[in-house]
Length: 272
Image (cartoon, rainbow, N blue to C red):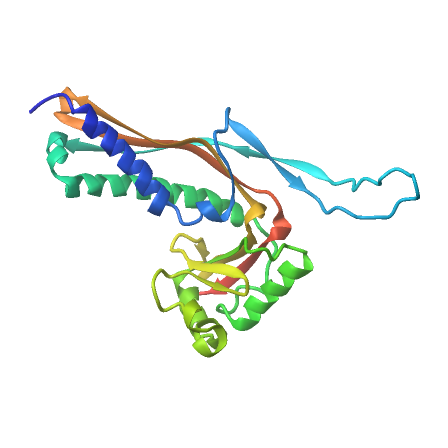
């Protein structure tokens, strides 16, 4: 067996992992505020307060809004997802086997990305009712009211992430799943399990925290949570003669931080 891998194969492998991560590795990455190419071990997101408009006297100075600019620091951490593979040279002519490793690495790093974001969502104490009941229309409408009362923008950048049990609960709500209410084009029964409802993109996620039979679900605005990227997914393939195998290492440097607690409403839902 050759101890060297064709560089063309290595480049294709690295490109495949990166593409797979971007397209299916993380569900939540595109639902939060993202800062790329961060230099150093941390970065700062600015939490901007509400501005107030007022009048001015003729020829007087224009009044300033006196916005509250609160810096929120986000730490970055390094993560790795690697595996030993014997006879990796065979993958050069076996696209299917190569894709198995590509997807495994991309999924592992994608789950870690979502885990970072979910951990910050879990720090929210802005609850819509308690966790003694399942996800009901009453609980959804309560969260809807809380977002509105907090002046969270209804601008198309609201997202809701729930567990699969809660997704089933939503399907039992006519206003969510009945064409008589939402029309044919917004039915959740077709295509990918994600849909627009109440100006929000709703999606199920298996990685949400569950404690004592209560699933932690969330409704939030994109700007309320930050995701910092120091390094996108990088893949390294190296030969180790003592193991007669190649080591495929996928790595990234990322972090997440809750920026504006008022922009996140927690929906604690009982799972029977």
